[in-house]
Image 1 (spheres, rainbow, N blue to C red):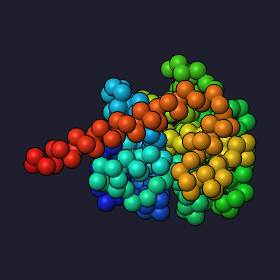
Image 2 (cartoon, rainbow, N blue to C red):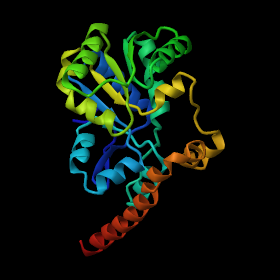
Image 3 (cartoon, rainbow, N blue to C red):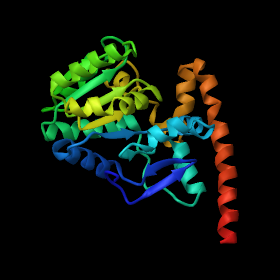
Length: 261
């Protein structure tokens, strides 16, 4: 059962929830307060969906195991419209994370930050606590730990000891989605009720990085801003035209099928 939304939209096999930022955040807070199981929340962008569409069925299954999947990118919104199943609102992960933090502060729900370089999560916690009075970031850990069973168990033990109900996992995609999925039972036993995969959000919360200027955001060109700042991303950006062309083919296919029906 999904946490919130008016239904779902299938984008190349990845299921997205049709929600608003506010309703999704409300649902997460309600689950963090009263839910008895772990709810994963993912925010896939076009690049990640293209990776799934290229044949990574395991990754598709991991993403679709979430209780809430939010459309992070302009590309996902355009694909949904192309398929004739528009989504209500684009929900960038970094913005959504702050929406959750604001509500966590109001409801006295403890939060844990996992990810980033050494010192980033701590800085992010301090800045967010100052920004949202009442927020309690009860623990932090960087993302530079070995992915061995013993090292992962040590990280989860720290989370359990903190008493956190909401966990921000910012290890980058798809590492963060895999971490949450593979350790879902241990995280649940640790007392976590909501785990969000939010990419580079901690760098922005810490003030180390900044989001694209408003003009880039309004024009749907945040990808270009990131590329200008990090030219090494050019290889990853190649997924975007491939995603668009794949969606065009899928849209034509769906139209033909609807005519035959």
